[in-house]
Amino acid sequence: MRTRSMDSEPSAALDPAGAPPARVLRNELLIVLALSLGASAVASLIRFTGVLTSPGGLSDYAATLNASRAPDRPWLDLAWQLFGITTALVPVVLVAHLLLRERPGGDGPGLRAVGFDPRRPGSDLGRGALVAAFIGGTGLLLYLGARAAGANLTVVPESLPDVWWKIPVLILSALQNAVLEEVIVVGYLLRRLGQTGWSPAAALVASALLRGTYHLYQGIGGFLGNAAMGVIFVWLYRRWGRVMPLVAAHALIDIVAFVGYALLAGRVDWLPTA
Image (cartoon, helix red, strand yellow):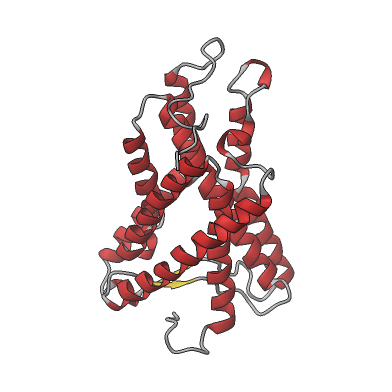
């Protein structure tokens, strides 16, 4: 089957009559990354360095993904959770704005340029579910193996109090992660790197390494597993021309991880807890 062409890859340059210079696009990309996953990658590297230079092995430490912000005040905690989820999506709004401004008069493609739209819900969800089943299962095995080998921290998907909003907030958190990461680290990043002259191979490596690095706080296993996932996701994006199946896959993986941990932690022997 032939790979479909996309306007988000290097072959689809901006309209020469209204295209910003490559230097402007590079600076724009650096700003977006500095406000989002690039900053997360630096923070993750610092945290990992701190763990490596502390006594004990990696498996002696824990990384909590969804922590309570006000454990004894559930309504205040809920406000903080919703605030964090909402503000984390601001870089996606910025990317949508920048893609609209690719052409004069704000007539750019917007997020449609990277296939983030509701045009094919059935196909996107079906493909996403298949990808999630494959990557989710292999990812869990890799995590358990890496932790047993001392190459990973104990990942605690959630430590929220047992209140009525716990599961809905975990689902919203999973959706936020999926939208932020796939729109920026796959769709937008590949588009801008292609438009500034990067080869497809170099762009794939950059995307995968970025994904692995901002997961480095989980340990070496987290880095390698997510970098491998990044390679697969870039390949699928180039094949399908849309990030929506990847968003669906990522969201399903995280929903199962977050909600599954909330329901199973302490009830099964094979699931590590802090």
